[in-house]
Length: 287
Image (cartoon, rainbow, N blue to C red; front, side):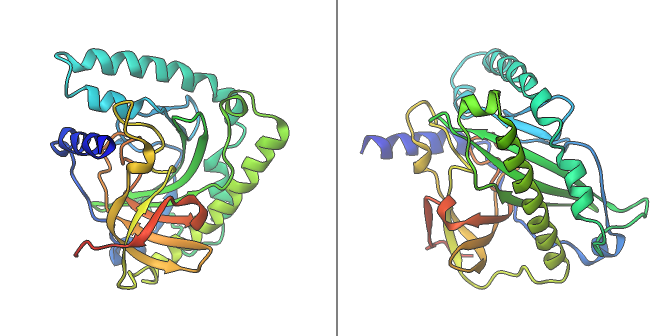
């Protein structure tokens, strides 16, 4: 009962700032213009995240969701926001030397060679390779690799959730074998994301008619308000594209501007291993 009340309270606090967007297939005119890979981060990153300086990595701290909720309660919310942002920025800066050698941009360029979607046109859509590093309240870190595409008034996000998780010690002082494993998983992820984009351009990522509720620690991994567990978060009414028994492809609606730890990573096309979902069921939500 207590957990249910806390979830309801959080919903009331956040309801005023939620702006849900539908994830739609890439437009035909955009396909004709093609894509060009750019070394940049999106202008509108989810709230409460900290880019790792000089890299395509973005840190999502476990306290970002708490800071968002608190901003509704304190008289001068920007004081809390500034303090949290400063601390997160300092921590993100510590990771730059380790992860700059594993460049998502370089990996994307290499794995996209020969793709029919690439174009030298000046008005081609921009593809930005980004990796979110999501910290959980349990001290576990999870990586999500994203190909974000922008242009022609359209935004698409294609996301691959890396299988290996890491402790705080492994993140701050990764060993050579751990960095090599991360590199291999980013290569696999780039191939999967390329496949998703090319299938979308061919019209092959259509919903199969089933709506599903999903929940994952790769989407929300920290306690909201310091009390509501991450496992309480699930997102209903998403379009199921594919279920192989081992993995699922889901096109999810979401708020791209929400805090990184309170749903900011939901919007877009996701490739999940079934083991990465703590909630997965046919939804009662209507279209």
